[in-house]
Image (cartoon, rainbow, N blue to C red; front, side, top):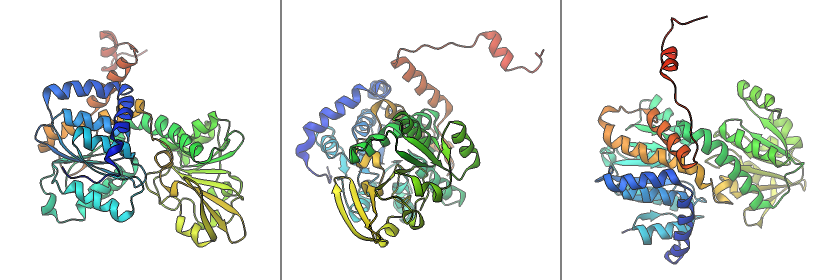
Length: 418
């Protein structure tokens, strides 16, 4: 079994941490029981490019219980939990290629390593795995049945491929599932981003001018949590509807060139490039803290920050101090990579329970229905989405009502009026 991890001796610690996550993922536990009996992924080679965290460890257990032959690599150079990688190799006998802090060359070598098994299904977070497939000759991966994509950034990239008619196989956009983005993006990113910033800096947020760039579901979540810690939240947006919503949610809304002058803590959550640029660094206050919650480190123009700085040093484990030529200091967290995984542990298991249930069930759906799918990006089937919600409610001992026959009839008719 091939693998490339930091230290196999970390496996015992990783196993205990995976156990803790498993205890908080009841939906995946139920799926594991069914998958073990039915083996819906038997004979399937599945290559996954995900953040190698405790929650991912639980997902790997479910997929393996379902009969899948697995290979796993990291979807970000800083998101690996090395003890989890060790446990997956030693205890589950999974081929893992993932080391926290790996350089770019190693990162792409690991992507190629999981594709070397010639997978039937890909499971991606950010679309780097699928992009690598599309940069290789078609013949090398012509047998792929389909794939899944976890995050907003990846879905954007894959829809661009599909719109250009270049997508080689069908993709299910797990991020579009309501049991994913309404919870994972809002509550998961919201809590874990604040967690990462505080772990990295130990700064008090109360009273701080906290700038959130982007008011999508991730931005909503980060803003809500920052506000809950008594920060003075400022929203930067380009979409008029989202800006209007942010204003009515009680936040101050302004352009980035204005926010840059007064902000003390900055977080990018857009999925787009160069959100914070040279002209913004040049007017920031001394001591400004800059971080990113988006998938890639492109949202902050780090090369521009380096060019206008005379010195850089690592002042804390996840904090780089840039001293500008005029003496001002700007602090970049986690090398501009997603701060919740660079400096903290990522999303809590309770929300990843639903996100990864979507992954597992979408993989099962692809095996069953791949012949019916064209080379396009699909939403998670509604029945899967609602079934996950039902299972989650059941695990929380929450009961809900059902429509009466009269109500069903009313909703399906047009004749009944005033």
